[in-house]
Length: 206
Image (cartoon, rainbow, N blue to C red; front, top):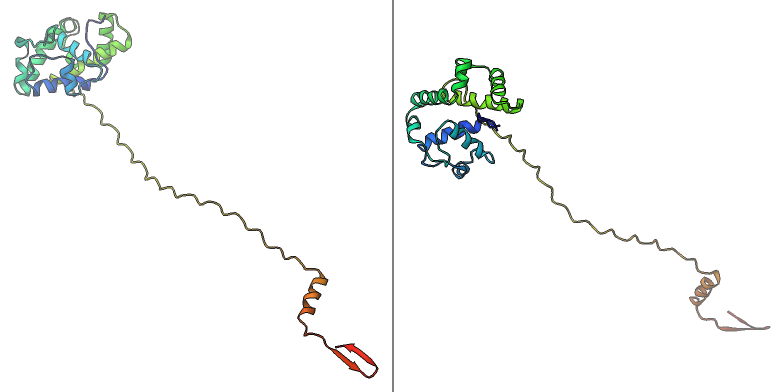
């Protein structure tokens, strides 16, 4: 188990300390307290470990009144008080490296790996966590969370128009030719009625 604390997202460290200053460091700090302010979601235990390592809270999460007085003052007093806390908690680091507050991350990472027998990833995170605390003490740039990318507005969906049922095609009417005899018969029916005419030599139809 690593001796020196670490966390993957350093912005959570700045957020946690900012909230502790804003709320005048409550009597008890636990996972529930961090969850109320959405600090280090699913990583609350890492923040708790950092606070315990710095002797700001005890094993039950209770505030150590003798070590948190600088949380109740302005920025200069807070930075000075936090620097003193770091020098006490990371005593071996300062003894071996001198003024570690302004050291490079790669140098710190190598030191943590050798001192704690940790992997390259853990050593890098231990160094980044130390630098985040150093920045809060006035040495470096305080890490901030990246703004979430703006979501692209979904294009307005066109209303689906109801499908028209396909109309059945009408079969073209085929003109059937009537038989010649039938047309003749109809034509003869339209003729005026015939009458018998008598001629001198006989009779005939007219």
